[in-house]
Length: 307
Ligand code: GLN
Image (cartoon, protein in one colour):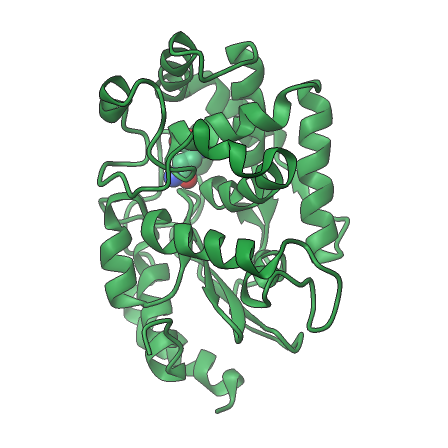
């Protein structure tokens, strides 16, 4: 199987769907992105890189950042993290507040907004927001061996000005003592991590350790243990697409994490990390055409964690 050819076929499969879906407009800076963008990158565990479309154009990775902050937080506080955030799919939208009251301010999982805000709070403790953001940015640059990655301050500011739902979630959890730092500081970290600007190649490189038993490259340095990589993949599969996680598992069959910027990072364990970008979102806030492209790629490669 030539991945180069597979990517060409995927592009043909989705060509009629490019531009479908609705670009996120609740974050004003994202509303102006061209919905007809489409890019995809596959980075194999051998380090081969295959691309198609706008794979080298940076976009706002938004909630895909939650995979990397979770990785950092597990490194910082270990299993203790699970006292403050659960590991169950929520079955609710990414910005939902409904379960938080019944479950005493403990978010269902680290990938819904409430959970990711708690994760950001754990990374902030003992630091200033600037230091925590420096740590997150350094981690992304380390994983990709690429110092050009930046946080887009305009996107962060844009979300800060309109992020009333996230402010509500953070304040609500603070009332249950599950946010330990001043709410504005924790939210500042969260909005800035979401504003990481990366392209598909960088994103697939950053996720490669999850396809590679926790190692940066085959036989290379360890980012996390094999067990931890497996567990992060498990959470991506069960919670990475919010209330559409079941559908994504059914259609694609790989762990994946989406963001409202239209990106998705998918992991084919032992094979490759895949990043796709198409800004139009479906009703669940996940990239419409990006999901279709991953479905096509998984079918054409036979990659699946289900056999
Ligand atoms: N920054 C976005 C928000 O908090 C992230 C959501 C997402 O990508 N699903 O609303």
